[in-house]
Length: 74
Image (cartoon, rainbow, N blue to C red; front, side, top):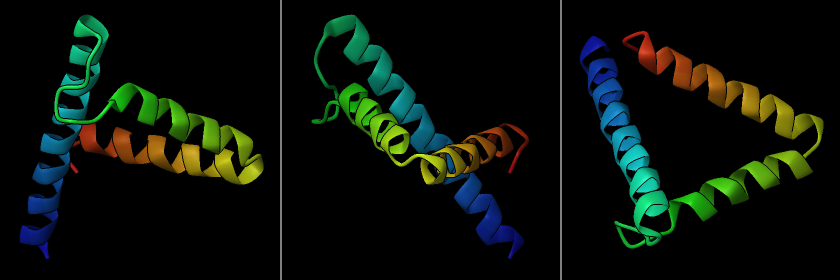
């Protein structure tokens, strides 16, 4: 179980790094890097959560907790 947790933690870190790089490149160059527009996708996700009312707020809190745990070493 520890091996799986470590693997998933590393994979999450790599994927979040790609998302961060994509957002930065899209802001600087104005075009998507990996064949998708990450900024518009993130904005759409935030809008959907905002339209979801209380359920969207709970989902946002859960996502924030997941990202904060990533920084703690999973």
